[in-house]
Image 1: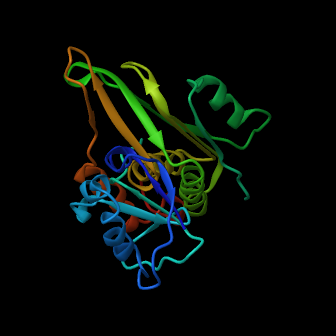
Image 2: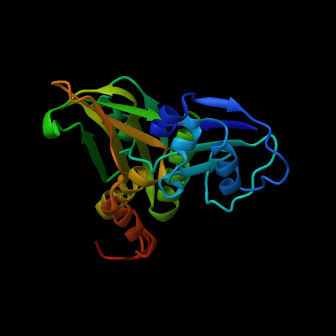
Length: 83
Length: 163
């Protein structure tokens, strides 16, 4: 599973992308966030307040209960501020 | 009518006149072109905005929003150009152009597109300040969510609404 980070989430995690292999019980976006939080202090800081994080699965915005599977591209980022 | 929106995510500035002319070149059925140009403001001593995006998803998201605009309003053309990278006060950030036989469809769809670009496309703005104050990520605004949400409940001009 490819995980991407953007904006201050990327800054806190310390990398812009990483390949991860979560266990099978990690089945949705919220579960993946919890699992990623344990990887490093930077991850923990990035995901400290889950309500400030948005996600996309395979380049579509995805809510916390959206399923994730091996092979997915999952991205985490703050609420968007374009335009 | 089938419209293929022109979508570009780019570092370089854009040319409003050239983009507008491209929507009307060789056509006699376009009654109006609506445009919105978003500029970088020098709020609070801002020295530059740095725009980051999610390559791939950005283009898909904008294409989806543009396709919805083309489905809701009778457009003859549609252009969205969004810059990324470092942008200084006074410089343009985003361009939305919509062309239609009639003004209501052009004006409404242009507003729809810029409202949705603010909330539905993966861009992030970081503000850089002079005098050692460093940088800060722009936070999403509730009024932008409200501006985008109003389009969910509102009929489009092409569906007979008065402008």
